[in-house]
Structures are given as structure tokens and as C-alpha cells.
Length: 639
Image (cartoon, rainbow, N blue to C red; front, side, top):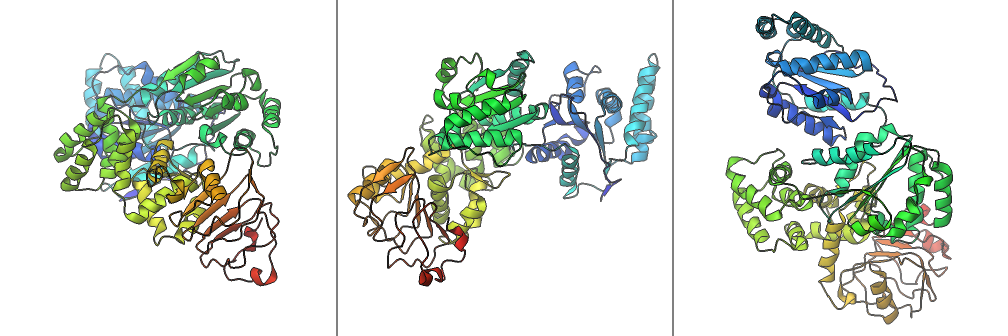
């Protein structure tokens, strides 16, 4: 039975402290490593809590390393897992003594967990703790001060009110309750979840070292480069999570390359940058130049942390972080890119190359997704090792293949692996596509809709729209999450790695390589314009988004949609149609047409399943009979 000894008390932290970790875990490895402490560590990370665990500690030796002492000092919270043999380890006792010192001198919060031991046994050194301390008293009879320090630390830690007690074995929900308690005690934060950071710790240390090299009064720009899917964004998120509370403001801008290509994309990135760092929601401007001016003016005296993720062009960097004089002294700017030459062109001298995982970390990452633990079951071991050799250390592929094989039996494993081994190891598209091929038909359709139209849209909106197309949409979205094909951010947005999105789009392109009018989904603005202007559309088309980077003028006959009787999704932005549509398909579920060119809709347009209707900045006005039509549940959708 799990019993919380006392309710948590409020705790404050000094804002000046330079923390590296949220939580430090102290534990006796042989007692609790695999059955309790590692699952606790994983749960903390899933919650976005940056925890330190000494995975190299073997319980041998007497002298604790300086780096471990430093890790304790740079943690906001220390969680001590007291177990039966905790006091038999001088290493654990040295950790404990230093934790108690940090509590007294640095105001660190300490959370003891009594794992199948009586708190009174720890506090007053009874039973196994009495035996252990008696042995140590004899062993260190020439250093009684050391033993006294350990006894005092045991008494102090066991006396704390922020304790948790697990009496009668492992109980569901116990770890989750501890995680929630720790999370509640941490200061407000803007974390970005990092699912698994297997093999990242050395990378984090190197990047942190590069950031620490710079003068505290100077702005530091650092570039992380490497191939797609290698883990650059994951590394940047882990570094961001480790240091952002040391700054006056922080912002992580995702998908700079993709968002910059959209109309007003850079402006939206500039607005996000300012609103997150300044914690202001109503920041308005309409041009890139005005955004640059505001960034310089508002941030030039602020010490900030900024991550620009997936930057492709020099111009993108110049428009978001064009110079060190844009930001206050001590600011850190981190850029992730596939293009090393971009960093050279921008004179960014501090760089870090992201490389493939080694065999050990590859196997561990794969197993985390395939089995939810760090090592494979014996019967799956040889196949698991074979997969890691095959993938050659690419984290995205390891994650995707592991998730695809999770919960499958041996026969399914063997069959699926034959599909992978038919593929050249250099063809990342085909490797990723196996996960798609294993999906049910409607799950495939949901995946392609998200890849082509709904990446970075809210889960709520996508569920509503696709729920009118497919029965069980929420289930299929959960399947895609389980397969690691999409993720759901803390703010409810649907996210997808750009390589996975490219794979989805390539699947659609291969439906009709030389004829866009015969494909199920169209997103490339030149293909869409060509289909509309030349009336090349067919019944195959289910979805269209037309969003050119610069405003386009469209000359057409207004009849291009007549052949598209299966069109479900129509999104039009940043275009000027010289003729209004004479026909719109009644199969539409989403109609989002910015600048719709008419005051009326086509006379025969009466879509029974329409769930989203937006005609922002258009001439359209409801006519009384149409306004009362049953499909328009919420006239507020009309902009």
C-alpha cells in the first residue's frame, strides 16, 4: 500500500541559482535500479522533468566523483530512494550527506522515498540500517567524523515532511503521484517534452560546454548541424530544458524552414518569438522589416535564450536573429540546420556536429520504443541487434521501427523484418514507409490528410474535420501516435517530423507521378494552379490546399471543381480569383477560402457534412434562406 507521509509544503528557489537538472536521483542500484528507479526516471522525463541518474554507478569504491557532487548541487530537487541496503553503500551515504548540505546551504528541496523500509529504521538506524552503520563504524573507526556525518544525514533526511512511503510492494499510480508532486514543486516553466534522450547525455554536455565558453556579457550563437532524423531537435530541446530558467525570456521556434515558406510565415515566427519571450499575447505588425525593428528594440537589453529549429536559408536567420546586437549580454542563440554552409556563411564559429548513435545506444533507443525498457527480451535479442545494425544509428528510424514492432508477436516480427531487409539501408523513405504500410486503410487516410493539410493544427480541429470523414478518427490518431508517426504537443498541436511528412507526400505523388489531377491530395501551389487554370481535376482529388508564398492572380473558368465530386477539403489563401466558382462539390467537409471572390455561393451548393466553413476577408454575405440551412451550426465560423 502506498502512503504519502505528509502533504507537500511550499518551497521557493532562488532565481539566481544556475540549475542544470530539475531532479537528482539517489538510490542503491542493486535494490531498486530496474524495478523502481529507472521507471521513476522515465516517468519524470515523460512529464518534461529533467532528471539526473548515475547510470554508471556500480556501488563500488568509496570516493564519490566531483562531477556527481556537481550534479547534486545543480539540481533543484533531490529524490532519495531509501531501500534495505541503501546504508551499505558509502557512495550512497556520501551522496546523501551532500544532498543534506545542499538543502541547508542552497535551499534545495529533498523528497525522500521509503521503498519497503520503515522511515523510523532510517531515522534512528534500526534493523538493516543499524547493521550497516555498525559495520561502517568498525570499518572507519579512525574517521568517526565521517560516520557521524552519515548518521546525521540519515536522521535529517528521514525527518522531512515531503516524504513518500511504499509499504507493501509496487502499486500502480505510486510513481505517477511522486512525479506530479515533484512537478508541482518546480517553478513555472516552458518545457518541451523529450520522449527519450538515450545517448544524448554526452552531446548535451558538449553543447553546454560550448555555450559556457563564451563571455557572460556577450551574445553566444551556436549551430547544431547534421542529417535529417539524426536528433538535432531532440538535442536542442534537451539543452533548452536544462538552461532556460537562467534567462529573462526564452523561446523555441520549431520548423523555421517550413513555416518561412508560407505567406507571412516569417512574420508569424517573429510574432511568436516576441510574444513568448515578453509573455505578451497582443503583438501586432505586418511586415518582416517591422518585425526586425521590434525584435531589436524590445530585446536588445534582455538576456534571452532562443532556439531556431531547422533553419535552411541565410535569409531566415537574418530575419529572426540577424546580429548579436539584437539581444542583451549573456543571451544564447542556438540554430539547428542540415546545412553546415549556412553556419559558415553567417560567421557562426561555435558549431556542434550531431552524429549517429553507437550500437549500445541504438539498441537501447530501439528497445525503449519496442518494449518500453532498455534491453530486449531474450527471444527478441538477436532480431533487435540485427535491426540496430541495419539502421546504423539513425534515431528517427530506430524510433519508428521500434514503435511499429511494439506489441507484435514473434511471427509478426519476422514478417515485418523481412519487409525492412528488402530495402536498401540508404533509402530512408522506404524504411519509414513500412510503418505506413502496416496501418489500416482509414489510418493511412488520416495520416495522409495530416501530412498534407493539418500538420501544426490542433487535435480538436482535426478530430472534428476528419471525424466527418472516418468513423473512429480519434482511435486512428492514437494509433499514429503509438507508431511514432505523429506527436501531440503540450498545447494540443499535431506535430510530425518533416521526413515523415515528406514520406507521406511522396506516397501521394506516386499515385500519379506525372499527373497531379489524378492524385488524392494537392498541396504544392504550382500543381494546384495548373489544375485549376487548365481544368485538369478528376474525381481522384479529395483535398486541396492553395497557399502560395506570394499572392497569385488566378484566371480560370470557374468550373474546375465540377469533376471533383470526392473533394472533402478545400483551403485557399493568398490568392485573387478573377472569376467566382460556378460550382462547388457537395462532398466538402472543410471549406476555408480566404478572400472568396463572390457575395454568394454556387446555387446548387448544399453540402450535408460540412463542419468547418470559413470565408475570411471575402465579399460573401449570408442570404436569409441559406443562413438557416442546417449545415451552418455556428455562423461565427464566417470571418
